[in-house]
Image (cartoon, rainbow, N blue to C red):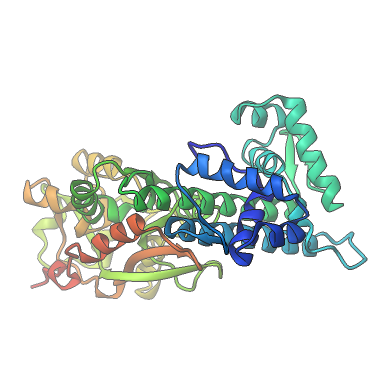
Length: 412
């Protein structure tokens, strides 16, 4: 996070003071002494380098930046509470009514230990990754397990695996720390220091035109904001999104939704094309059929992707035997080179080969692909609240000129 993670109990105290406008009344709610709360708030203000309260004779009143941070802390605590309830519900050993307020006893150290083990799968590696000792991390993780009175860790051949309950709690804990990171960023932005990072999960289609245009425009306006683009299979990107490692995804949307804790927003519709090198024999045929296409080796997307589904359906519906000489990849660089060096055929969006078409390196066959129309857009965490800077990037994405699928047709 780039800063010292505040004590969770101190964050709760901050929320109570904001609600009660009083340290003395808040102390009765969080079971901390008034001096302890005073010191906790002062420490928070040092970490954030800003005043969270106006101290007046009639009480403590949240400042404007304090209000921004308060919203994030409230969401952080909500994530921890939901994660606790869900973890306790999952653990089938619990026969009595669980204490759903156990999250009020969590420490930052315990949650960081849980997250580290979930990512490393090993206590020693997890300790190294977060800069602590293995005994300290092991102790914190086991304290959390004892507090919840459920199993969090099981031994495996590879090291340590998290139980389903622990995986759920770790996911919510990561989302909670994302809220804290967002809170830091909003404070910086309020002071006129737009920095931080935007992490984008990008699928192949967006990488060639839409995303580069949006990034260029955004960076002219916000040069100190770090942009990180994460590539990978959809399943990996979705996991990163749901665990807070990625802010949003851009690419082909899935229908139906693969899971109910995400939302999707369509930016435009796209169609696939049959793409070949400019010297390909099929370009001599003004009306190639599916049987003509089937005799050539193909480059296809991974199984489970919308484009691969289109490929499968295309042959099934026409009752044509699918080609058996397949190269399966989503790497545009590899696809382009394979097309240049062979008579292979690829299934791509023409949006992805605009430059190659202009340079006369690749071409699209005159083959009707209207049925492959698919939505391209954003995938977001449900109830995600972006910062102003993240919102601005999303606005730029929405404003960026989109390709029209109708311009892809070249059928005589």
